[in-house]
Image: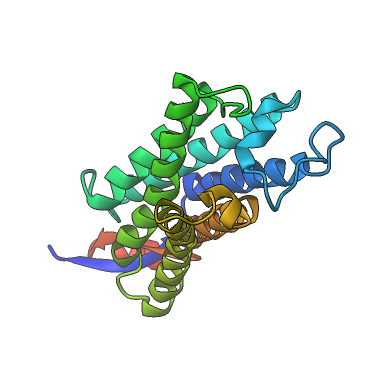
Length: 227
């Protein structure tokens, strides 16, 4: 008995994942217009600055929605055999998701007061998160879109773009270490971070919303599926 490929609809889990990620992103955008956080500069202040306000709970819900959507989305891809349970993509996704939870558990430190252990953990988790999301998408794209080079290319370009924004921050750090201005002042940090996050989430959405997903079936099942 041989196995062929037919086309089936995307599982509800993938749609739920996209809705969850989009909901988290929209909540972050909402924070910029709510009274308690509308004065935070989106150009100079990082996204985590929202966690230092009375709207912290909205920030926490937003980040956890993104983490939840990422986890169930990659889980759905693994269950449908589009990704191995243990692969570069699944490892980077796990690191991305875990880092988001750590970001919520250890809020951004108010560096005007002084350093703290929690603030340092938060900063490390942020770096891991921003680096791992585009890497997860990059490695997953080939497996998820084996017969769709256009979709694979678009998804990978978005992943590279997200990493390029991260490179801007690394470049500023290198310049700062060689006698330049403090790296967080040398670039519009808030704007760069938001662009990096938005590009990464769009890349993730591009990965998780294939219009139709190939489903392996046996020859005996093919007539029933075709009908």
